[in-house]
Amino acid sequence: MTDHVPFREAHVDVVVIGAGQAGLSSAYHLRRLGLTPGHDLVVVDGGGGPGGAWRERARSLTMEKVHGIFDLPGARRPMRTADVHRPVADVVADYYAEYERRFGLQVIRPVQVRAVRTGADRRLVVDSDAGSWAARAVVNATGTWTRPHWPYYPGVGEFSGRQLHSADYRGPEEFAGLRVAVVGGGHSATHILSEIADVAASTTWVTRRPPDFQPVEFTEDYGRQVVSMVDQRVRAGLPPKSVVSITGLGRTPVVEAALAKGALERSPMFSRITRDGVVWDDGSAATLDVIVWATGFRAALDHLAPLQLREPGGGIRMDGTRVVAEPRVHLVGYGPSASTVGANRAGRAAALEIMDLLNTAAPRPMPTTATTATVPQPQPSSDPERARARRAGGRRRLAVV
Ligand SMILES: Cc1cc2nc3c(=O)[nH]c(=O)nc-3n(C[C@H](O)[C@H](O)[C@H](O)COP(=O)(O)OP(=O)(O)OC[C@H]3O[C@@H](n4cnc5c(N)ncnc54)[C@H](O)[C@@H]3O)c2cc1C
Image 1 (cartoon, rainbow, N blue to C red):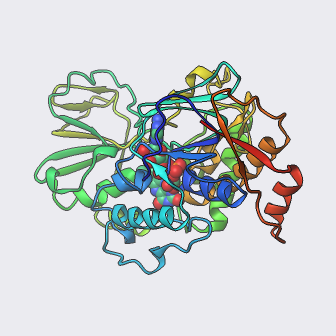
Image 2: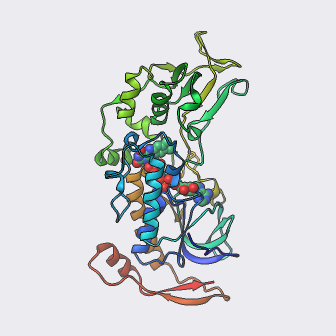
Image 3: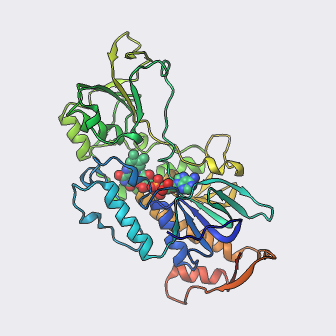
């Protein structure tokens, strides 16, 4: 953490918004290609500490229950050797904290970005609760965790029991003796069902489509196939679909455990919520104490609204990580890169494109109040990424305001 917080718009080259897997990967590559964290590169994060969304996950989600968290670039994760009974929230938070330290990424937190807009001098102005930065490019890596999706069903306001989103699930204990419905067909639903089946009076699993169980390991190759399928959608300007709707529900150890407990007997979507529970079209009903909405998340992009990036199809048209309508903005961890493996690759791709953009763009006007300093270029090396960045530009000037 650093105290480098501006009182007015500070001029920098790049702001990375979000320090989960996507933001850290992007920052690592931007630094490797010649930017200096805390000076021409600023990384801000809304979290209370390192770990991205992982630090918020239920403590009952232990290492043995996650599909796979891939290494951040340049550092082997301790996940390979971590105690499988440790909460993933702790293991990932420790890993990211060490990563930020090791590479000097100087993440500023907690900083909530409120808006990104085009400033008077055409720079991208990033407004936050800690001040504003005027940047030449922005990497948006804000994930989905802060935008849980609550679908609407008739009667939702009438239910007298408790409703919560899977984002607020903290473990099975509070469901002891209760009648619980879990809505949603993804891995959050199966994780919750596998745990509360041991303590609840009854569980009901409700999904829109019948589950498509697949004997699939979440390997790196498989991750690549998923990435390519979602990529086709966002290139067309459509909202990205959920991973499960594309891949089916992999038979992970958690899914196998839930199946063995009989917790994955699926019911179709109910037609209405009542005071006491839910009813289906055929007149059948379930009396419930709790409804858990494991209905996924949406990309946390509200702060980009002033840039008007959305297409008529409701999505943001992308070319790789670059937003077609505003090429200075890259979305990393969005759509095809919304996984730890996808975020890693996307961070590198975004960094390379941004360095090309910075190095080929016309020299920017220097603010009259600024002092200037010279940013050293990357040392000559045989590394092809560095060579490419070097070819694209000479020495750059940095305005320090
Ligand atoms: C329930 C669930 C389970 C998953 N399981 C897996 C899995 O097992 N394996 C896997 O590879 N992937 C999994 N994923 C996908 C996951 O999204 C990615 O793996 C990856 O960890 C996400 O990284 P990220 O950096 O994009 O987002 P995050 O980890 O969410 O990081 C985003 C950061 O941005 C910050 N932020 C958000 N808005 C703002 C703002 N306005 N201003 C400032 N900061 C902001 C947040 O505080 C957060 O720290 C899962 C996702 C979900 C939702």
